[in-house]
Image 1 (cartoon, helix red, strand yellow):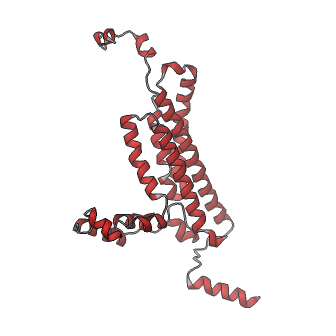
Image 2 (tube, rainbow over the protein chains, first blue to last red):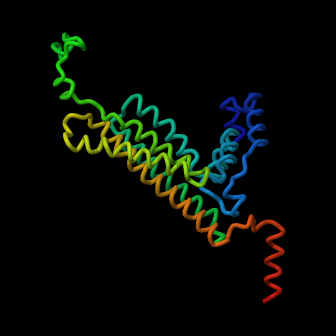
Length: 116
Length: 133
């Protein structure tokens, strides 16, 4: 399934894209919180999730780090709203932000649940 | 409208500028800073998130006063932006504060000794404790 999606988007055959993924996989930065305390932080799973997303693997990406896709949507919606001034743009951004924050908090709680 | 068009910028009276609905000056900055605070929650123990959201709250407080003094002078859309930015900033601030307080608590209670429960060292320590019991 992910391969199909990737092929449809023209991502799989693209060599630059593959190199980008490889480069990202090789240069993952370690989380300071994780290495210091052993607990996951708010952003743990983000890099792996981005790599899954670049492969066109949406389900894996959502499982790895649920807030990524809402966050990207929010980052697209913000400049659009600032440029075109939608009537309910501010409210939509607010709701997206709250959803994002809730997902992040939930993500941290679920990932650290073994430690409590 | 035609009269306004006829007047060039230099000829416009000052009263006309103040009465026309202008946007709040810091609404956009507040919205951007408020929303930016969430990705920065992930790094440097939430310090940057706290900084951006505090700046957003400080910057927006003046505008809020200005809007409350005469709501008719300002654009309603920019006021909505300002409010949304403030709410985002508050949430970002809460998340950042929770993060940094959690880290400080972990440090003060001596919880932080580079331990990772999955490593072999930690498993050995657990075994030793079990033997003691």
